[in-house]
Image (tube, rainbow, N blue to C red):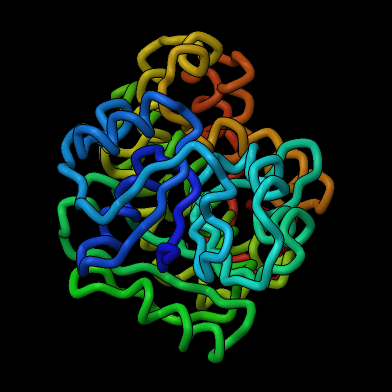
Length: 335
């Protein structure tokens, strides 16, 4: 008998999703890269490395062997964005629903995760799960709502939603896979920016302005790739943006806060157990914005800070930009 659901990646978010999926007694196979994580989960019902707060359900079985997911019809992929392709090519190819839960853009290629997955797992039908989610809250069963964007439309939704939905975990349907991915990717970069504002002590007014202007950048970039503005105004865009720009529970916000307080990006990235995906997304996003002539000054600023520029100087340069109209739908070059 095979498990009904597989989860690839036993970081905090992957472990939390496995815990949520197992809350109704469903069997879940959870693949972890680290042998010690596999051992800890199976022997102690804990993942002390990534999610120490949760006592995991008995129906979660950890494994370090991807072939153990063979035959499972629904697999959630929660690996870091930059290794997604390398992991998925090792997964047994078969028709299945592959739900992408990683948020980012592939460095070097500029591909969204759904593009990476289609190449690495051509037999799968892709969906994207994204929204305002802190792993520890999902694992604790606190109320959460997300976007579930299905490339297979309503038919795929009808298969997936009963597998994923729980009393405190509520997915909302979308067919805009691109929009769902873009919202989740860009908010990570903007969360770093808001963390920098916090670290510099610039106040709540500045953070609110940054969220609003960052959301405008998200809309511009998303619409240039064909995303729907309505998607980006929803849970996977604005909702996720507000959450991750407002709390040190966000890895990206915490990274930005440390940068604002004077730490170096190189030291912070070398010393982090968990991945602040926005640090990997910022350079590729800045490059794509420049190639497409999309005004994204906040993204460019975050990229400069990650490359070693003084946060205080970068903020001063942002504030010194020429004054503009706030709404500029007929002037795409103005930010």
